[in-house]
Structure formats: structure tokens, C-alpha cells
Image 1: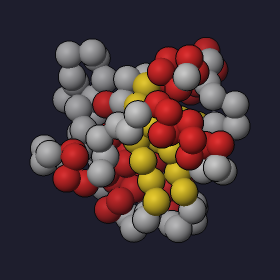
Image 2: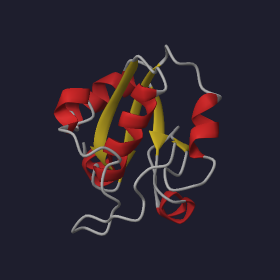
Image 3: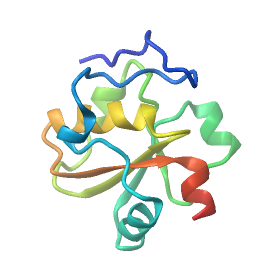
Image 4: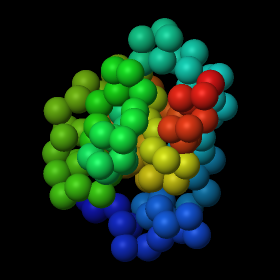
Length: 122
């Protein structure tokens, strides 16, 4: 399943894969304090930005899985579906699409952490 990477939002990030209301799927960003609390409790952190963005700065312990990469779904397939995950990008838009895709693949405990700057400053 491919994400709608050709459509961009006003901030230059791809629009979410689904045109449905993201809050219905749970893909809307949670507060940075909620995301950081989940991280402190042991959630796996996934940064869905490009490798170049990741190299410029990322959360400690984050795994880089570029949502725009051709192998994104394959790499997700290697992860345990029941583990807790916090997904973030630059502003939360790409993370929304990534969370929706993860939910469609059967991930049961995944939240959109929003943007990197919000979490790094949190």
C-alpha cells in the first residue's frame, strides 16, 4: 500500500494517505506531554522523516523509517504489532499517514507524536 506522497500540504509535507477524518482513526497528534510520557514508559519511537532530516537531528533512541520510501510497508512488517509506538515527523502530517497505515496493518498501540521540534523541546 502506498501513501499519497505526491500530494503535499501547505507546509510541503505529503498529505495523509486517507481523506477520512484522521481523528476517527486515532491518527491525530496527541499532546507532546502524552507522547513523551509514552516514550518514557518504553514505547518504541519511529521517526518517519527522510534520512537527511533524521541525520540533522532526532529523538534519542528513535528508529528512522522514511514514510516516503518504497520499502516503508515492508519495514513496518518486521515490527511487532502489539508493541507501543510513538510516530513523529517534522510537523505531524507525515506521521498521520504513517499511523493510519500502521493501524491498517494491525498495529494495536500506536500514536502520532506530532512534530520533532515539539517533542525535542518538550
